[in-house]
Amino acid sequence: MRIGRGVYAGAADTLLYYMRQQRSGWNPLFQTWVHNTDALIVDHPTRTGQYQNVQGGWADAADYLQYVATSAHATFMMLMAYRDNPHAFADDFDAWGRPGGNRIADVLDEARHGLEWLAKMFPADDSSGEILMFNQLADDRDHAFWDLPPTDSSDYGWGKVSWRPVYPCTGKPQGLFTGKNRSDGMASTAGKFASAFALGSLLLHEHDRAFTALLRNKAFLAYDLGKQLPGVCQTAPGRAPYFYEEDNWVDDMELAAAQLYALTGREQYMRDALEFAAREPVTPWMGADTARHYQWFPWHNNGHHEIARKASPADRAAVAEYYRRGLQAVVDRAGNGFRVGIPFIWCSNNLMASFATQALLYRQMTGDDRFREYETAALDWLLGVNPWGTSMIIGFPNGGVRAKKPHSVVADRLGVHTQLGGLLDGPVYRSIYQNLQWIRLHEPDEYARFNTGFIVYHDDLGDYSTNEPIMDGTANLSYLFAAMARR
Image 1 (cartoon, helix red, strand yellow):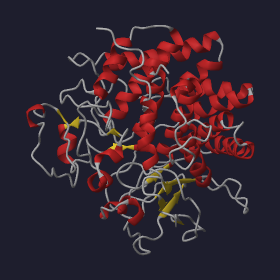
Image 2 (cartoon, helix red, strand yellow):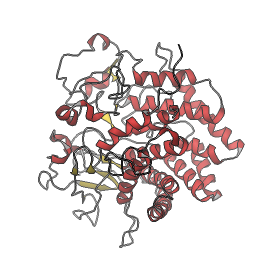
Image 3 (cartoon, helix red, strand yellow):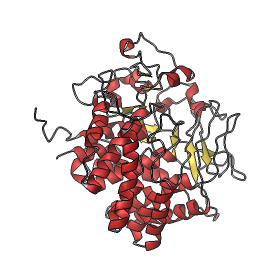
Image 4 (cartoon, rainbow, N blue to C red):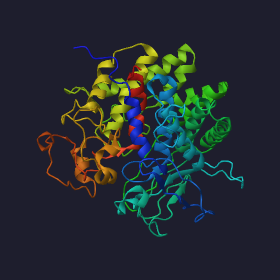
């Protein structure tokens, strides 16, 4: 059987349909402003209760929380996808997400939407002279209501449809209620800011020089702050026990240093990048059978690839070997019929996309095809070659078997077509599913005969653990789909 070279044409743009409808600020799906009072500062020694304009960005999933960690990674992935594969993207929408081109690729419009929000979340040029860096907008009190974005009834103590809280990076454990995270620095967030700002400054320079000059300045400030305050800045729990438990940060600083080297050519940044790379050569989930929620995020390290684009042959070989070691660790666990070796933790599809992306990057860097079979298997899994025979991307491929009842109030009230392009969380270990709070299937399990093993998936509105579309996972696929396209 011959597979056409053009079967992935338009695939990367399909992901953007989901990204656009996730927008806060002006939302093109609802044709109105969403969360236009964001936000009031909390957990700050001197500014608690003050207003800070942080309107914009994307909702993280079917809830409306917003995180710098996931948003900066999503922004970087889209920018990187365009930089390396500009042929894969069309110009069918304007910067507001409305039909009609504007002579800028839609993926750049979407990435700019992310950059504008990130710039607000790091008001480094604050008139007081204080370095203020925010990490999170809203918290899990959002989950108390099941509303559409324009009528979000969440009440954070200031009344419904009102202010939401914005959390600063403090370098210390955070949480306004009983639960606390384990934050001990700022580098994980600062590094993500710096890499997105630096690449955005490079790619958008010809479109808006004033904005890219602002991004450039913020990239340097964020990187310097990350070096001053090493450690992680995790998301803050609200009343629920769940938060993003990111435990690594050198990967973020490696990528930031590599991007600043690309921006400036200063050798110190390359030396920094190589030093950070050597400290975490392999992303720690690779080869493991479990991990905590978002413990090793991003799920693949773009920094190794970005070093390889500019480094000496010896250093390129070193970072390629780091990639190979991680890939091999996953392959060593892939002795099943589907040839997949990731741990089935919450958001497993994100790991599947990252494994395939890292395998692709390694293959492009080295010409070594040894992992091609497993790269393909991971992509196939996402597109339906899995125990349930269903695509993990809403509405894609057209005509295929895909989720009809995702965990999304927008899909529930306005139709599943509104979630076109969204990547679902994906299957989880049965033990995870059984121990998460508040999950209740709304209908008999149509996949019950396939859910008899150690992993489960449900196409059911009530299963937020396996069937919820996720913003960062969707953007995480953009590089892979763009590279596969032949326009």
